Length: 200
Image (tube, one colour):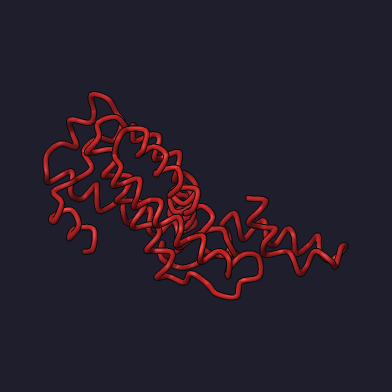
């Protein structure tokens, strides 16, 4: 609903998916609107799914926001670049208290907010400048997008409910690996959470 509102307000819909001649298939509004809603939902959920250890979701969000800002300023989209920098500053302010020891957390609201804003910054960059490839944004946001897509396929292939949580995200696996390692090196235990983020 939030994405639908933004799209109706701005009349910006994702029609350019970087697929060459196939992009014409996404031009009609009845296709562009659901595709836009799907992409923004995927990225928002992706940031929520990778929010399992201190600094991972916010760190990926910071890299994404700074990357968006650099791209925006390169193509003359100063407004988008400035908004991305403001988001970066907010994320840095949060990370001071979240990484490495987790005094505060993003929670669903924070993770979804970062994903939602970045999704719309990316879509706006692609659709309004004509100079930014969608693939640049896909690479920039690869981690959360890949995590949500793999989570959906993993659950469907195993016959489980797509919306049920599991502990098979890559950050969960790395964290458990460090937990096993900490049995041999007990000093690792205190740093297991932030080390997971640094490894990823």
